[in-house]
Length: 467
Image (cartoon, rainbow, N blue to C red):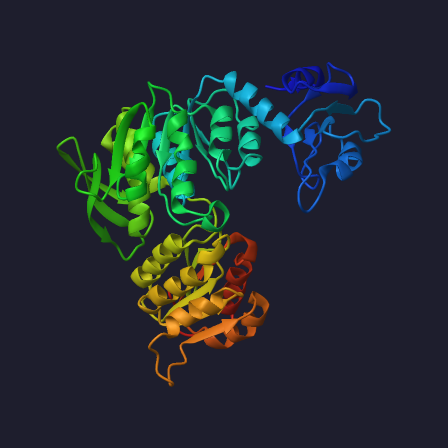
């Protein structure tokens, strides 16, 4: 499904400044460090860098052309330059056009927490019957989602697209591009409250997905969340609810974790009982799986097909990945953090650990004025779930404060460090065979580097084998 420079100019309402209108473009890219040969480079002006400064660079690497919103000079006359009013809008226009050519049903997923794991679970379940696409990695924003769509091949039947937002109107913008027929709302809680201001504003922003669904669509709603119940009326289509609530249409119960990392549970649906096994630990993942089960049943999958998908699911990286090393266990949840996801991760730490439970927790960003209290809340919760706290980052002083409430003068089980580098030597002295370490912080802290450090420390330990 290649496009020509002329087609791109027409679709984006741009002006072809140079290049052959019939020249083919094999894909789209926004990062000059990626493989760009044959692709159309979209020059985006960001906070840290301006893509227009790298247009000549991608031209020398064999890119077919560039979408630009200000004029740049490229010596090669064969290199295509399409001038548009906004390169971000143009990228979205290309994605909307591309998706309109595909005979695919779009499933949009949003929520304060759980949307990535839910995307992975829905994709795994539907793949048992339909050829199903899902946006890779974190391509879920007003820039990432169009790139994900433009990478979609023509023979998919369903596309499961995660949708992120940081402001009112952004989910609507993504829905205008993707036009979902099925929408999943996983959670409404205080993530990004520092940006949107109130929980009510977050709920209103998330409800834009429900408003975008057509009358013959399907809204899939987590019925354990009171705010989701409140905004459910925004959906003008059929609704199906899931969760642990007694009145959920797809209700999960009798949750039984296994030593092998599986979770067995039962589901009630239309007066029938089903038993499922999830290839993931944690009650919160069962809740996410219930959304996939609800969609599976609604789209005609058998319980056996759903069960196979749940067992075969592979989650996106750094989402509660339980890594059993030779001597320690690492729970890598370094992708992002909010109060609710911190508490879920701490629940998992308490559930899977057999030795000392060490919580290595960094700052939660975009909390605004709620930041100090949010971190104190996490610290209080962690004290009841972990044996040792290693708090890292400016706001995490409050996490330590919450942990230390009521501690005696002899209690040395919590430590604070300004950054992960200064915590490294301490971790080297702290970690011993048999420990289970949870690593979690907001994305900007890049705590995957601490995961790498723990893996290195494990290689130098001697003692009990944790596998």
